[in-house]
Amino acid sequence: MQHIRKILLFLLIIPIVAIVGYYALIFLLGGPALPNFFEIRNNDAGTHEVTVEILDSHNSSIFEESYKLYPDERASEAKPFGLQYSTGMKKYTFKITLDNGVEEETIPVPLHRWSTAIIVIDWENEDPIMIMMDIV
Image (cartoon, rainbow, N blue to C red):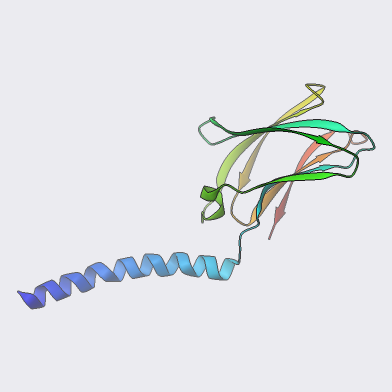
């Protein structure tokens, strides 16, 4: 009976060690996560007020903040804990409002721990609000 318990315990430990080892390997080989959830860059010559609302995959608002950015100024927000230590891709929807509704964009953005959404404001472009990805 004692021998069977040891075998069962050993068979239980093997999958647990394999799962923990898999995730540890992903984190070690992938390197550290990028610290920012998103970054806003005002590449325009004027000052702008930018409101960013972020919805999760269930269309629930998880973040909303307004920023007043002067020319060539940047602002950023740290990644939430769930994304910082996730191994998979998570889908978000960014709702960006420029200058109290003068321009609005709603853009779906998939992110993982090694990516950051970069919001670029520039009235000289065809689209004054663009989102790019910074990926390690």
